[in-house]
Length: 127
Image (cartoon, rainbow, N blue to C red; front, top):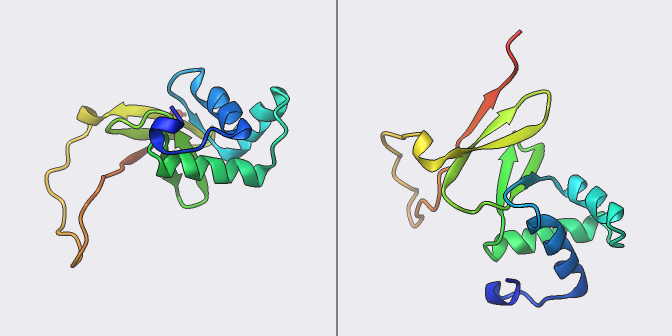
């Protein structure tokens, strides 16, 4: 998978890739992955985790989901879809791409093209 994406399969990338992708589609923060790596006895710094997550994202293996610019999750599902963010729980769930319709988009600025539209729907428990 790493080679197919143009990444050299270093020991740390392989170990982090196994942790990330072994459990199916999910959303993880760098801190969560760091904790999982420590539990799996993979010696890696938080800086290396961030670098690896960004390399995986640039290679198309992950999708970055930014919430308010303060919290970022990395999604192993790179298909076209949107997200629910559960406030207070810091949990992210997928919304199928067909679950939201957007009637129109503005023209992209001069020399730019629209690559993707990300919609984050914030929810919280009733009460």
